[in-house]
Every structure is written in structure tokens, then in C-alpha cells.
Amino acid sequence: MVGILSVTVGMKVTALRRSYAGGRAVLAAAGATIGFALAGATMLTASSSDLMCLAFALWTVGWLVGPMITGGDTTLRPQHFSLLPLPTSRLAGGLLAAAFVNVPVAVTAVALSALVVHGFRLGLWHCLVAALAAALHLLIVVLAARLLGGGVAQIERTALGREVSAAVLGLAVSLAILGPLALSVLGPRLLQPWPAPVSHAIRWLPSSWPVVAVDARNPLPALAGMLLLAGGLFLAWTALLGRSTSATTAMLHHVGIPARSSFGAMVAKELRTYARDRLRGRLARMALWTSVFLCLLATVAGFRPAAAFAGLLAVAFLAMLAGNWYGAEGTSLWLTIMTPGRESVEVRGRQAAWALVAAGTGVAFSIGGGLIAGTTWTVPLVLAGLPALLGGGAGLIAVFSALAPIVRPDPYGRTTAAADSPVGAQIVQAQILLYLTVAAAAPAIGLSVAGIALHSTGMAGAGIAVGLTTGALCAWLGGRIATAVLENRAPDMLQRIRHGTATRPVVRAHKPTRRRSIPHLLAGAFLAVCQGLIPLVSLLAGTATRDRFWYVALYLPPPARLPAALVFLLAGAAVCAMALRRKENHQ
Image (cartoon, rainbow, N blue to C red; front, top):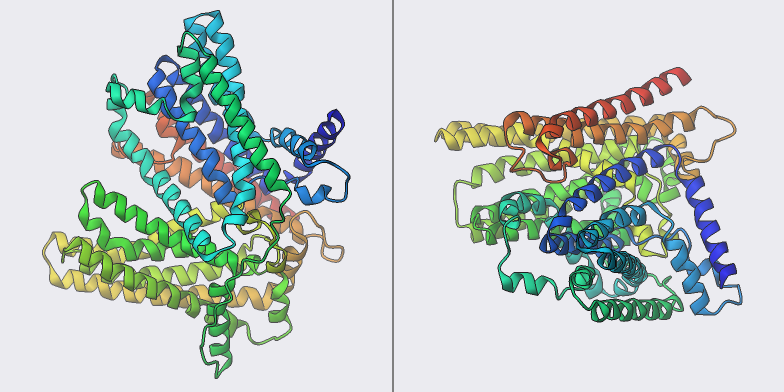
């Protein structure tokens, strides 16, 4: 057993050491910084058992939802060891040991150390129990993540399973967006003594059993329950290892669209791809469910007019998750290279297909949401924002797909849920794409809001006209830029998609340096804008205590918020400057 443990752990360390380079290393460092900041915030809950139960529940939910979004950690797969004469139990033990070699485990261990601090306040015996309970809970969340990571592919083999998985992801994203706002509103109440029924109810959750073990005079029942839960998860995961997860889950729906021209053929091909490709279908369903749950949660919270904006949210999220056309399709780009002169048809056909999908969804959601909301003042906003978002999304998706393709496995090589999941660079790209898409619609929506506030029908109508104009302009300009990129750099794009950022082409060795600057620019923009500029504006506007969302600086003590936002802003600007300088020096 020791031999397989040393082998798997050594393989995992070597794989991580060689994979975290360039832009991926920057993204990993940014994620680790945010994670350790949240872990430090968890340490502040050590003075209250109720708050620790809540914090541990949130960390556990993160571990459970994470594999559904990322597909789990597949650095080492069971298929890599299929030819070795290893019993499944020994293989499971080795893979479990390797699963502890990553940054999220270290971050979670720091967060769980709050339990040790809490136990130290109660005495030495409670401190020892806290250390054991924290270790068991860390084992439980890692096992649960591995089990879900392997089970997602099993779940998504059926249409119902795919829809349920997308709904869970949409709910998780919705809670991640609205959760910080709810915590900022409920924060003062959470710091007060909780009602006895609520306090007792949260302690029944498995995530609260470590706290129960530390606070109890007899910790054996809670510790025994954790041991049984860990054993059950390990047995279930061991049984899952023996099953193959390589079944095809493509949705082979027929889309009867006549293709009487090259443009029509491109549109038909794209629509069939949306219906059949697992990656595009997963992201599209995730976007739709996210918009549904956001409006539903806002309506339940008392803001019923939010349902009228379901169509706008759906289009915005569809644009957010669609900015990687060529990276997601792998080496099929060579078909475009082999048919020169068709670049414009290629781009315009993809834009038209996405616009058809997004427009149909946006219109349907807007009509249904408007009927639920029962308001009329939201109509000008929807009429102005919908064409602006459609045009802005179509143009920006084309630009991002051509300028910054993110390497993904070829469709035939996606044998795991992780292959269909967004990677770090794609998540950063999606956030930037969302902000830019909303910014493209801001002029039209702003005019409509002003017209509604001033009771000016003319201004509201001008907002609709501006939405149509900006949408058409963004779609045309973005398509033109993407066409120019394909005409001039399609072979370089194919080289990047085939070999990734780590491979250096022999003939044109300067290209990888230029391409490696793109992840640095995306990471720098994320730090500067998402973690620096927006929190800085919120602090200056006086809304920092209400609108925290996922901005790390706003969760720090008040004296440290402004300096932290400035540090994030300067760090992001420095990363962007270094990437641009490196590119210019190499050129």
C-alpha cells in the first residue's frame, strides 16, 4: 500500500509542478490568494459555534458544487492505471492520497483550523478533539468531491441527468451572485444569538458535526458518525472507480434547416452543434438556469419586477459562456484554413446562429417574465436592452473567440466531465466578456431608465433606437475584427489549439511568447477591474457594506478595504504592463 501511495503522490506533484506555468500559474496564484483570504475570514468565526457551523456548511457546499462545475480533479485518472494488476481498493487509496496534493485542500485546512482555535479556548482536550475532527471533515469533503467528480459523467448520460446537473449549476451560480448580498443584509443578525430551533437544526448537518464534537462533553458519537460517513464515501467511490465514464453523451437531435447557400450551411451547422455538442449544451443550459434562478430568488425576496428581466439576463449569460468558439472545437479549424476566402461567411454564420439561439430564448423569457411581473414600466428597458445585448454579445464573442482561443480537448476526446467544464482562463474570460457585454448595452438601458424616471416617452423611444444601433454596430464591428484575425492568423491559431501554450513551434518560435501574454492580460484585467476598480468605486460611493458580492477587499476590516482595493488594482495593472512589455520586447 505504501508503494502505490508514494507513486501516486509523486506523479501528482510532478504533474502539478510542470502544469502550473505561464498564465495558468498566475491564475492559480490569484485563486490561492482569494482562497486564503476567505480562509482567514473563517478564522474570525472561532468565537461562535453557530457561525462556525454556517462557515463550514458554506465550505462544504463549495466542495460539493466545485466538481459539478470543474468536473473534479482529473490530473490522475483511474484509466491511467487500468493495465496494472492493482485491486480497486489499493488504487482508490493511492488516488485518495494524491487528491490531497493541491491548493484547495491547503486552503480548506487553513479554514478548518478555526475549529482548533475554538477548541483551544475550551481546553487542551477539546483542542485535541478539534484537530481530529478537522482532519476527518477534510477527509470527508475530499472524498465527496472525488465521488461527485466521478459521478457527474454517470449522471449526465441521460437527458434528465443533464438537465438536473445544469439546474444545480445554475442554482449554485445564482447563490454565489446573490449570496454575498444576502450575507451583507443578514450580517448583523448573524452576529446576534441565534434562535434555539435554528441553532439546533444547523447542527444536524454533517458539516456541523466537527463543531458538535468539540462542544460536546462526549465527542465519540459525533466522531463515530464522521468515521462512518467517510467510510461510506470511500466504499462508494471505490465502487465507482470500476465503471467506465467514457460513454458518449452527445445529444443527436436532428435540426431540419435547409442550407441553400454557404452562409445557410454555416448557420445550420452551428445550430446542430448547439443541439449535439455536450460542451455547448452544458454551458447554454447552465446560463438559462442561472437567469431563471436569479429572477426566481429576487421575486421570492419581494422584488417581483425582476422577473421581467429574465430575458436580458439569459442573453447576457449566454454571451458570457460562449466566447470560445474555436478553442472548444479543437483542430476543426483546419477546415476553415483549407477553404480560403470563406472567413467572413464562417464568422457571420456563427454570429447569426448564436443570435438566433439567444434571441429566441431572450424573447421567450422576456414575455414569460413580463407576464409574471405584471408591470409595464419594464417594457422600454427590455426593448432597449435586448437588441443591444444581442448585438454586443455577437460581436464580442466573435472577437474573444478569434483573439484569445482557450485550448480545450477535441470533441471526440472529451471522455470526462472535466473536459466539458470551464478552465481557469475561461472563467476569467467569461467574467470580462459579461462586463463588456453589459457595457455595450449600458447606453441604451441608461436612456430608457432616464426616460422612465422623467416620464419622457421620446427619451424611452430613443433608448430603443440606440439599442438597435449599438447592437448592429457591435455585431458588425466584432465580426469584421474576427474575420481579419482569421484571414491573417488562422494557422497560428491552429498551432496553439493543437499544441497548447507549452509547445514551442520550431519554425516560428516567437509565437508562443506572444500567445502566453494573453492569459497574463486576462489575469491582470481580472485583478485590476474585478478585484480592484469595482471595489474601489463601491468604497467611494459608500455602498461597500451593502454590495460586497465576491470582491475580496470588501470583506476585510474597514481600515484595510481601501488599501486592499488599491493593491489589487496596482497588481493587476502591473501584470498587464509586464505582459505587454514582454510582448513588445520579444517583437
